[in-house]
Length: 210
Image 1: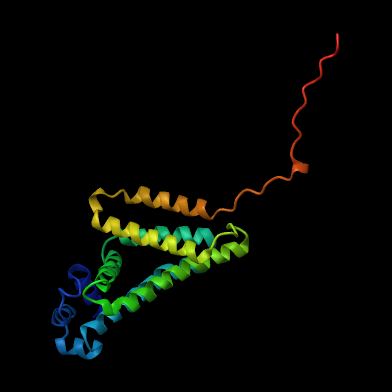
Image 2: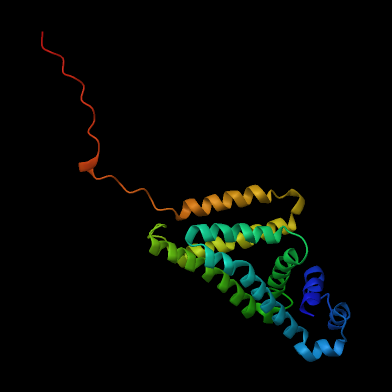
């Protein structure tokens, strides 16, 4: 039932979709949909949890198998693979943006749920940065929470641009540039060489006095 709802809401928005249509698409009655979710608002909240479960399935294996900047780079790449894919995967990413947009307008009651979803995404990125700082592979002067917010915002914003400009947006090259920017932005600065260890400047031989 959630899959049917996700398809319809991603294509039409919540305001353009009725519980009866969702029930029909899923092969159930309107009454069963209403009994299960209570209201359209309850269904939208269930869809947000559905997106959370989907995100966990996609990103948690990366976090478990990789660390730090490497894990972060893989998450960025995977996010855009999902967004630019076909079928259910791309539909879930589109559904996320439809619900985010509606939370700003006709479905403002969804704002706390959307905010929680975004916080979870930022916290995942923040933890990767903090772990990398502990490992000594990331610049320790970086503010992990703020940098995570910048990276999460960039990912969300780039995907939104691509969804709206599919034919004219160079997604692949933009993703590669973003990964490069993330890596360089988190990299530790080169360790300065102490003056005592610097190679002495070669001295030119003195010319003998004539």
